[in-house]
Length: 387
Image 1 (tube, rainbow, N blue to C red):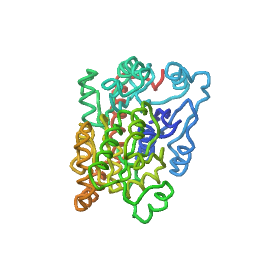
Image 2: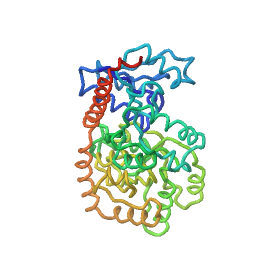
Image 3: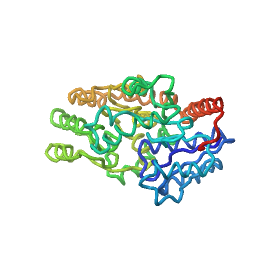
Image 4: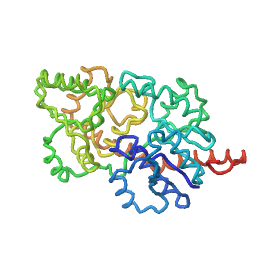
């Protein structure tokens, strides 16, 4: 097989979809050495992507940056279809909600969540409008759709009226580097970032959906009503609608206990997950919930939202809370902070549970989807993509 994958998410700083795209491509190349995989982007790939793939030394995984300067603004309508027409790919996998509108029978589409449709208040209006206009077109243009969790599959069937047999579930997984690191090996990174020995860690883009305002309100309540004064470390790039969060922190009595450290490298994040006293992920909506799973893989005791996708992802190896309840979140933080036995239990259970999720398994499930699509195409007697 010769498979093209959307490399657009790898042309900028890696976020969740970027991690998904790169890890999936690597794992596909590893489990299928006889097939060829190409990541295609109209913009140059980030240096870290190039370096990581050079280190991986996978001859059957390549980066393809077409000379498409004149088509960048119309990449999906003209640039990508033109590129595919000039090359012989068996299948195109849209890893980030988008596929070419042509050749429905050989497009696979990954939908990570329906936040833009179900929770428009968490997003910029222009992105909501674009999603409402384009997502139905993408769904009709895909032969098969991938969901990253069973809860996402149920949502797609309910809200998008997709037949269940068109959707395959392929869970995400922690990156292989995310495993417990001895505390002594985290010291230099923590000192460089100005992080205290005992701290609470929150990871994610700073935007309304990640619900950091509830977390800092819980911290403020803890500081005001208990003898504890934990440092809250927030790791993640700036998103949008941060004014309310910034305003609350500035006016609260716990402002000096909150430390924003911005975007972190994998090495830094592994060190923080491995050394935090508690990792908290109070997101209001997710399609999967990878950050709490990666925290668990590193042995962090995790408190996370009691919402369908996260419940499915973390199982019984984390403490679950109502993400809208400040009092409950504050109470669970205090309880876990003071209970060494419970923290040890979660630190032991987390890596065992996270080990059930691997990118090799995800790649095998994804490869099965490719095979199903191509077999159906063969039955129809179609030529290689594109015509």
